[in-house]
Image (tube, rainbow, N blue to C red; front, side, top):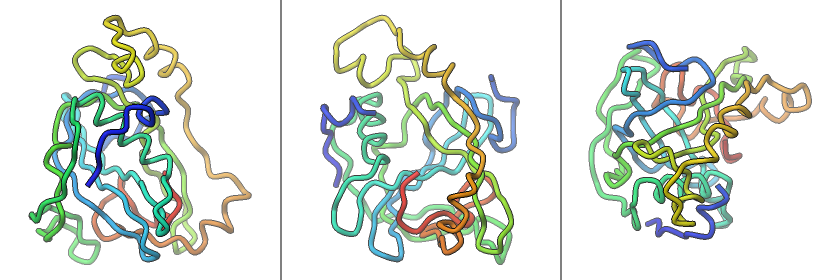
Length: 214
């Protein structure tokens, strides 16, 4: 269960139709699927399927809690999302989700703890990040940098401050940038194993870190 922490929440190119999101930028759409994930070491997170108003898709992850219960940056992002969605509590429920099976090379049904409260409209600022796959190849994935309310373009902090005119978003968009793989991270990423590796295609979790949040 996640309960909205208002204080934590404050820390927190128009797409072509169809296909996966592959470019850093500002996107507006809807979370179409949300469910809990766990890392091999016992950390927790949330898997999100996002579809823009233009029809592009992205599989995203927020790692929220360490095995010891400490919060990751993804927890702050989740709080910001809940604020922008006007959601005060998220409670996992038994359900069925569609995940990408690497062996079958197609989406298949899988039982999971779903989070239906998160399936709502949202604005996302996404950055393209390079990472090293388990086989040594360099892959790319989209990661959430910031969130905003889809209809008003207010950020979580602005909502909590009861502002009615969005001011922060243009600066946040201007600060977006691609994330190339840094040499010093290559050794770190050599033993990464995603808790959700089998659940996603190109824009998802192939080779994602087992416990380090995005």
